[in-house]
Structure formats: C-alpha cells, structure tokens
Amino acid sequence: MKKRIIGFDLARAYAIFGMFIVNFNMVFGNHDDSSLLGKFLVLFSGHSSTVFVILAGMGVALMTNRLQEYTVEDRKRLRYTILKRAAFLLIFGMLFCYWWPADILHLYGGYMSIGALLVFMDKKYYLIAALLFIVIFHILLLVIPFETGWNLATLEYPNFWTVSGFIRNTFYNGWNPIFPWFAYFAIGLYLGRLDWTLKHTQQKVFITGLILYLFVEGIRYGTSFMKLSTEIREFIHADYIPPVLPFLLNTIGFGMMLITGFMFISQYISEKNGL
Image (tube, rainbow, N blue to C red; front, side, top):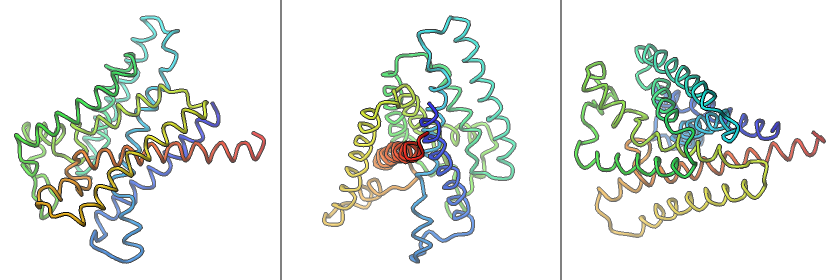
C-alpha cells in the first residue's frame, strides 16, 4: 500500500506542477513560441489537468475499495462524505471564478457529485459512463456550435454568470466541461478498482495507455501526408478546446502511462532502499 500511495503522489505532484505551468503559460506565454522553453511549456498542455482528474477518480475509488465489507449505512456515510467534499469544491471554485475564470475546482465538485452516484457500482459501469459522456459531448457538438458564448479573441466567456451561460459553460463548452471531462474521472474510478499491487495490472495499464497514445499520434503524423479538409484536420489535431475524441484518447493514454510510470519509479526506489 505504501508503494502504491507513493506512486500516485508522484503522479499527483506532476499534475499540480503541470497545471501551474499551463496556467502560467496561458496568461503570460505564447503558444506560437518555437523556442526550447516554449516547446517545453506546450508539453504540459492538456495532459496535466486530465491526469489530475483521473487521479481524483482513483482517489475516490481507493477510499471506497472495501466493497464487500460495507454495510448499507457504511455506503451512505461514504457517499455523504464524497458529496460534502464535492460541495466544498463547488462553492470554493465558484468564488475562485471571480478571480480566475478558468477555474477547475467547481467542476471537480461536479465530477465528484456524479461519481458519488456511481461509486458502488460494478467497475464496468465506469467505462460505460465514460463512453456515454464522450458520445453525448460529440452529439452536442452537432447541435450547439462550440464557440457559443465565447469571445475567442480574448478567451473570455461574457455571459458565464447568466443561467444559460453557466449551464452551457459547465456542461458543454467551458474549459473543462462535465461533458466529456467526467470521462476522465470515470476512467480514474475504474483504475482505482484495479489491484495495483500486481505487476501484471501495472503492465497492462501501461501497455493499454501506450497503444491509445501511439494510435492517436500515428494518425496525427499520417495526416501530414494526406489531403484532408480543414474541419477533419482540426478535429484530429484539436488540443484541449474542444476536447474531441482524438484529444481524449491521447490524454487518457498519456495519463495511464504516466501513472504507471511513476508506480514503477516508486517501486524501484523502494526496493533499492529496502523499504
């Protein structure tokens, strides 16, 4: 258990540092900067936030991992605890929005609230939920233009504090909307239900992540040799906004590799030091 926590904490530290870099670069940086530093900063774009959301889902799964032992009252108590934390994040995040419009904390509250409803289900339903949220998001893309409500020149959302604007931003076209971003949390719930003490589990998760990541990167590389419409090319190469399928698969794969990679590192250090 100690090794397992160390590995997750290392991944969480990376995610927090990465989100700081992304937010700093968003405000003070230049996404077109071709310098070595500019390329380094862009490496964190998208990956850090997605890893953190996956880890949040894993954290909820790990705090409720004795499914066979829980009584009905135990489950109610744990669900209530998760919902209290979600309410805190939601309220604090909404206050923080006055200072930082791209806040993700209130959305964590949304992810956790939905996760509290699913947490005691069989882990296969987590994958079904992830797929469902991704599909619904892409259906919404066909119905509502993603740029609705945005001032793309300034990256501001002027009507965020209206009822319609808040709902649309939170569930569909904000920085980290519940559709499809809850999919990352659901993937985290699934991963948290796995037995991470088994090397076979770690290897399987890493290989699955590697396949997803290379699949998307291979398609992206292949588009340089193809004559594609602007819309298709933008869909394949989308980065963070909008979070369409290639971006989702790429970042999920990266997250799976990163988390297991830090698990390998923590285990190596622990074994070397005889811990």
